[in-house]
Length: 367
Image (cartoon, rainbow, N blue to C red):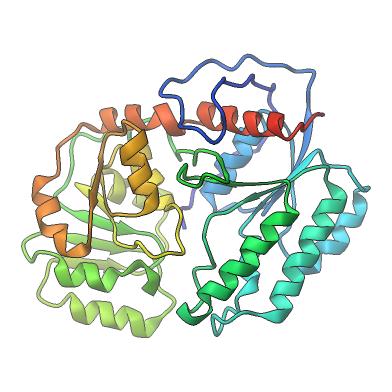
């Protein structure tokens, strides 16, 4: 999880939309978005108050250019609070991660109660909003066990029929609307005069990220920092054992924003070791680009799409973790400013606003 401090959010004048379609490739140029202050949408956003989730903060900031954003709770127990809104009050409600409750947190198996709660919430949101948009971040919940993945995928696929539209942060889905994932910053880290010698794995430490496989293949003469909390003590001890004899440091806790920016912003590269079927994009990828840090990632459909369709600087894609040593030595050396400049062409807040605007126009969302 990427943490950052949050300033008070305000509504902003509505920008105009760029001309490309939402399911096509991002425009390589940013265009100014003139304001249209007469059109103000009522936008519900789930989850609402996520002060430690920088993605939610940045997305709500983008949407606030298009209308007034109402934070809504993802908890089924909070449905009674919706009684304050009349049916059809919202022009649109945008839903994220609501499907996580379909899998039991303790067993990873399908939860009948969670599945029922998930569909009840969808129907409740449909009553309150003229349009309902689902942002699909994962194919199935991260914590689902492998035996349940196919069943949970079918449940979530079925639920998409109840939404007005499904959006994702990767353009490789032909049947979904592409919305760029926002950068967390749009300037290189101030005062960064160079890179340290370390590589970094950043974020919550979980088995699906295949960090143990990365450690097994990581060269002994290269320093690696694994930074992020781990809730599975047995798995963490497994990683520590695998790292013996190598230059690998663990920081098993949440990092302050200053620590995270320092460690990631000065790294020679951020490594994304997971390519499992559940993940669509990784927030750590966009966090690294935001700071001008190169990324080395195992091949995924998203990375393949980026390589084919975007002229993005700073990304090295490998077929498997056994190729990590050669990737470290062959990694191109790019200035942080060049990586950030390249990333802003495709993932800046201006670009994100434009794509949300296009989707709303396609759905005939009007204030």
